[in-house]
Length: 380
Image (cartoon, rainbow, N blue to C red; front, side, top):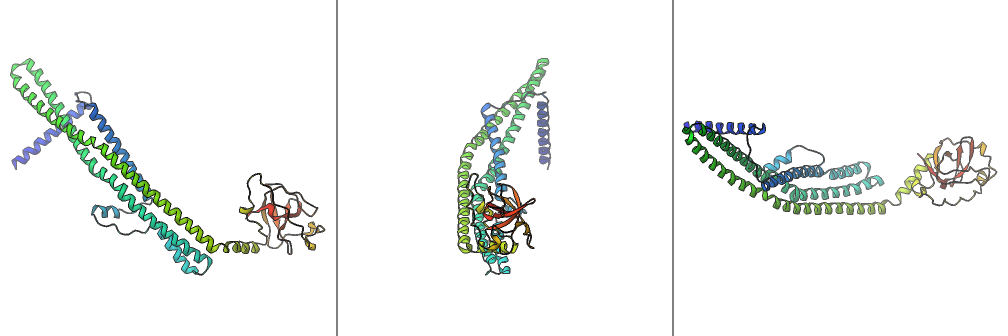
């Protein structure tokens, strides 16, 4: 019991003495032993490695798992237990799509497409899970092992080196005081001998600890080599993942194109017929590059309503209403029943019963006349 009390008192005394030495060094009131340049460079390189490894590790975690969840996986890792299966966002989306298809009817165009897209979303999710798994093993785990293992050992030895340095400088200061006292009285010679002995011991312990710390810090070079290999494996896993995703999406596009190639034009035609205005070519097909030639002029209709003798001023918008249209090309009216157009202007258009689908009635202010659909981009 007495031994433990004495040891605690001794440790407290050593801690206090080191604290005083450290404070005086900061205030410029005490000398400080500087580490050799090689060791200082190793320490700076190690700190740089630790700081950037930590940043890369944290940001890789964000990349692989952008939506933070609870710390369940962290505790499973610490307990060395298998992490439970967790559905990826793509897999969950795929499941929702397939469940929705059951409600809408798997035999409908929308339902069958949802089933197909949902299946490919689940495949994307499976590829994502494999990528996350490989990246965690080959990249994140080595970085974490360095930060939680090697770096903690290095930090511990560096703290011990700092304590040995403080002890050395304390002994140097003590010897200096003893020599000053010896100069005043010969009775202090024993104190000088004691201080010199303590200094030799402190110097030996400091040198030994500096050597141990230096060896550990030099191991940072092998850490870089290991992390370089891990980085290559991470890039390989990332490239394989994106290649899989690209292939899945190409396959999905092909399947949708072959399964629904005829469905989409029919759907657009239904929407156009119910709007009361002939849709004509879609904006995607009529939009052309600058300088492209305008389409050929539609043939003049043969029925009486569309003849040049049509009294345009008597034509009124249908009950279904009007739409705005952007003019794609300049157009010169062939007769008084037509309306001349300038590229990029906006006009109002509508159709009337029995009118040829290649033509619409266009209005610009007080002007009115027939305009070719192929020269327009219908706006919603």
